[in-house]
Image (cartoon, rainbow, N blue to C red; front, side):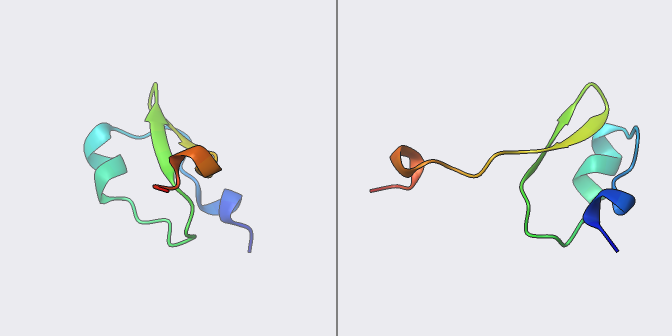
Length: 47
């Protein structure tokens, strides 16, 4: 099963904070829609 099949369409902030996709991906909530975040670049890796 693909991770996209588990992504809710529209959720509240409380539901988002309780949601655990377990896919190792970072997520953000934009206008009620969960969106996958891009991985950190080299300049943000804490070097």
